[in-house]
Image (cartoon, rainbow, N blue to C red; front, side, top):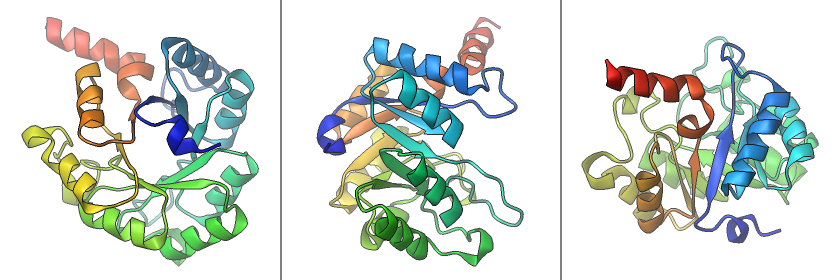
Amino acid sequence: MDLFKTLNKKLVVSCQALEDEPLHSSFIMGRMAIAALEGGASGIRANSVADIKEIKQQVDLPVIGIIKQDYPGSEVFITATKQEVEALIDAQTDMIAMDATVRSRPNEETLKDIVAFAKEKAPHISLMADCSTVEEAVEAERLGFDCVSTTLVGYTKETKGQNIADDDYKIFREFVDAVTIPVVAEGKVDTPEKANKVLELGATFVVVGSAITRPQLITKSFADAIK
């Protein structure tokens, strides 16, 4: 399966709920994936081996897998080490996404070594670089990632307060111009209009999470507006 052809100009729904969230449950995420499929999603992004396995049992859609794990002394927590990569390979995820920021990683591992490890162990699995800056995206392409995403724009100290939709999508346009590999739009794409816009601007596909799958945040947006 050519994932990039399958997902070209399509919607991927991020079905995630962390331990402190109301919907935390692999069973619920499996059902969430079914709902996403029925709504027209072409792929799923999921966190944890348990959720990935459940989702793969429920829907026949490609899954972008991550493992969120906190490590002392490191701000990197999305597929941070070789250990998480190996677990995702064993879970037979279709694509592995990982933090590709310049921040130091746990266990003194380097992004270069982790990419090489993934490519050697599972060359058939595509790798997505979750970036916060254009410079990180350029470096990710150099390291051999198959695509870059804007997932972490606004979520690092260096990019705090930024949004890919700011200034007529200036940051997103810079990502598209800076690399030759596919660019995935993810992070604060919270309306159908924004999803359409990033696809028009060159996103290979778009990932939407909280605006679809986190009802507590959706409810809050309504409640805040009413107040």
